Length: 292
Length: 280
Image (cartoon, rainbow over all chains, first blue to last red; front, side):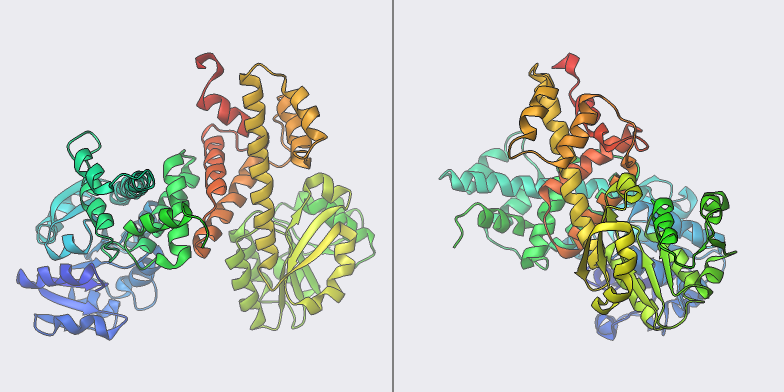
């Protein structure tokens, strides 16, 4: 199948490579030519624009940073819509505001283009191991067409509902992971300040009701003081911003997520945006210690 | 807000042209000698300074798109609306291409302040414009502060809303705590007014809460809208606002309850429904 892939960053690159290895013909376009380097040895054609990709592809995957980027790639000058053939399917795997996804989906539908929002969870490692969780919103018949390709990228693939529903699920995911990472960091800081070894606490808690993957994996990285991303803190800040934007739009009380969003503002504001979210621990340690 | 402000400028003897989405809202000014323009562009052709006072960023951007086609070089778009600081900065850049000045001049003081010409006006734009703008500002307000370059007025207004709405929430929490403990909040209010916690918010919103008078002053949905911008700016700058984040949530709860068109003193009711008295 002729497949387009736009957005060849940390996450997009391994996913596109999975599709190429499965025997599909890749059509690529990238803002930065450097992103195309890893595709020299696979069946991939490089195009001059997203519109040109659209002229050759039956399905196009998009994996970029935020809603304005998706909009630019899909709908603006030399974007996908301007080159699309009828029946093209655009699959946006970026994490963006659910309402923005609905708007982009509606604008594409008006041009006869199908749309799925399919944000993912699992980070770079999940992408490399094709073990992502993929949360999809859109029409069931469109989902069925794309599903075999999703299966090359992820392990847990769920059609959640109509367009936007994938992003709602991802927002819920980010509430749980954001608040979860903050909670583990707070617990470890609490233990350490109380003179107790957080490693022992973690070990004990893993056997009880406080067990979680975040306690296990993120907790271990905190103990190892391994702050390499993983999932960059500025992206978590962005995702929590999306969560809170929706809370403000809908009139929703999310007190814990709101407090966590402010914690992530502080992580990014104090220069740790490029580190993993587990840098929350360093922030808590710093603000719990006497000023130097 | 716009009506009394326009009336003051008209009374000061300026040649005055008006346009409004709902023409009826201009009748009052037309009776007093203002000229009617058929469109924002026509209004721009007749004016050296165009004042706007509308609801949100999108409204100002839409108006500016029309004004920019007709404003002459050297003229000024003076916007009194409360909008997002980056939108104000962006508008100033767009106007600069046409040698038109954009000034963001949000105000504080409510309709009462607008009527009495006692508004606080915080403006952003080129400092040299003060000479031309100060006489107009003097017709409208008492505290006029040039906060800095374009967008600075909106940053000042964001700070104003942060401090004020957080104080309304603190007042609501005090009222709730006093009532739950069986103490008359009116007594508490009187005692506090004379001490270090005394404030205009405690005086005004405290009285409304004590009287359970939730008729608006400023409707709560506007405070909600402003606070969304405050929190967006905090995220953009990477600044933690722990209290701001919590107050925003209480405002979200207020909207959820359907009180957006009532007074922001409804923050008291949000606390009451979170832990109802009969369950305490």
